[in-house]
Length: 284
Image 1 (cartoon, rainbow, N blue to C red):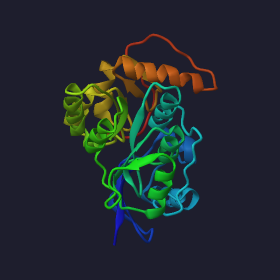
Image 2 (tube, helix red, strand yellow; image 1 turned 180 degrees about the vertical axis):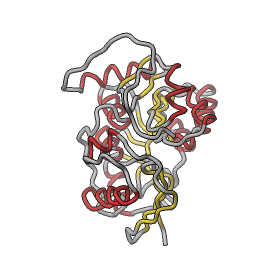
Image 3 (tube, rainbow, N blue to C red; image 1 turned 135 degrees about the horizontal axis):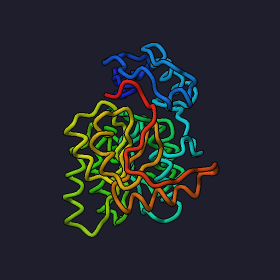
């Protein structure tokens, strides 16, 4: 039976076409402030990790033909949120992201970017869902491979360049960090700018974290190595318990623009990153 493969709470899960869920690797994270904020859970267990996936399936139709594409900003400093506001204000030409049921997607539509990414994290493999692909294409998206729903940021980046885009945001999962070098090499031979958003970094290796030093924005997730290796190299940090480390002037420009969309009070001060408070436990 076909399935989606998802990294979730430091574990690995299969969500089958009949929506049954199999735990491939047990969740390793026991506490996460984002999970407590979003779902009221003070402790992460195997059972409530599965229940959270079921909630996303039932409430938002993730991994199903009835998927909801909600364009409202969900978290203040998420990758899809920052990409969406940057597209809206013309700082980016296009984005490359990943959607369950479609795989890698190219789009200029900020609402589609947010609708895809708001509640989806850690997708490793997926399979084509006709209704999802049709929705994406009818809302200005281009699916890399309609037949397989392949996830391949590098090939999708090359396709975006061939289509004439020049300022291209690319989301790359931490477990695909070798892609960063490939994109940078291709970028160096072309008249284009890739802005690399590195997400889903819980459990990445030291080598994978080192690869991220050539990115623009890196989400710390529950990663020990991202905090230790990427944090000290950042020129800007947003967030404390689950920080985002910004490594380039372009990344900084996108984040500062995004702050215009944040409607609550903020404190900005000078400090050497990483500046941390209690975050996910344990860091892995």
